[in-house]
Image (cartoon, rainbow, N blue to C red; front, side, top):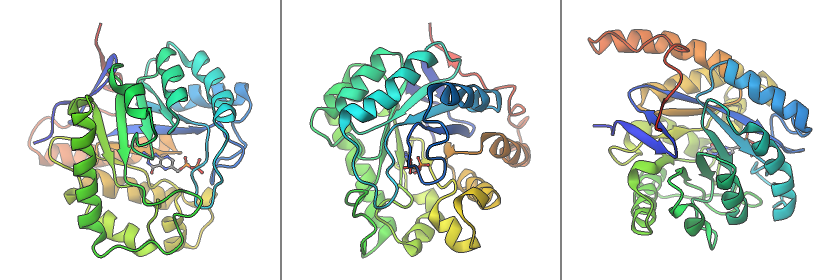
Length: 297
Ligand code: HH2
């Protein structure tokens, strides 16, 4: 059984439905939206647009982790992200910061960010301490290697078993370090040190990847595996991304990280109405109506 909520600071995200995490990259070089929202006013407008489209969470990132990406100096990442986070205080949905940098985690939490989404799973020295006492939600993601080199012949004997075991162990370690399990979501890390074959194996086994009671987060939006399957560049992968989001939802994912929030909402509205009815209850409330999370005082 799934736990009733993912605790993210002053928000508690109820887990009987699928949450849409809207991606907002304030980078010059992200693989699908690099450069579009690097200016503060463009980023703010996109943040508002994503919330109006029904994003349950806004995920702000200042470092591209696409394959081959060189690390960004920490101060540059902070200069990209913090001015926007300052403007986003008071947003009605939880804001997430996509970073591995402890100093940025601390500064972002001081600005009221509710979630730390770390593709390196809080393994940088000081990262666990940065989040421990804040009560924020955290995303732990499986990543083999480092973005600069992770796609150079990644190998697994059994990718599904290895990712599942790794996530379970990392959850235990983080819990032992003082972060309550109720604050944690887990992510298999599509495209992070995985070949196309590995990605497809993980997608086929999503329902077996996550330790019970923790929400699974899936980020497949516009990714290269979808390009490989369709022959399309990142900007033309909407249909494939929607198919991936529905597959993820059907396999039990509780958060989908996407660039195209409005379209994903529509796809999930159809999926939820049918799956909710099949479950024999009233079905989930119409998407968009039940969007705001219960906010704790
Ligand atoms: N994927 C990307 C970045 N952050 N975080 C989680 N938890 N899961 C993911 O799959 C994930 C992530 C890469 O996508 P994007 O942010 O669009 O591109 P870039 O890294 O080039 O900025």
